Amino acid sequence: MNTEFESEFNALVETFAEMVTGSRSPELVEKIKVWSIYNHIHKTMPALASHWNQDHPESRAVIRSLFEEVRAMHLELKEKNKSTNPEE
Image (tube, rainbow, N blue to C red; front, side):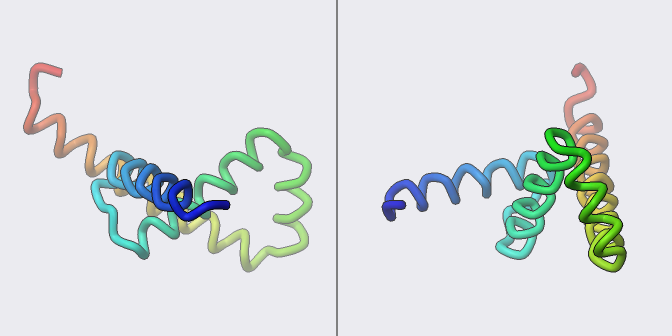
């Protein structure tokens, strides 16, 4: 892939991370990448995700924790936005 595409795609992922969680820190962007890929696999190929979960229970726990973290951050951001924009 070319450098320009990588730069533009990374900017897209950073913006997505910020819109979902309210942060675009490098650590959180990496978490969002993992979260997004696993979420896509889980929705499009549930048998593959299930098989992987059975073979890797420790990693499944890490993914579960990551999903809970992202969900909590997203709900916190939504609540914060709701309180600053009550008409929405």
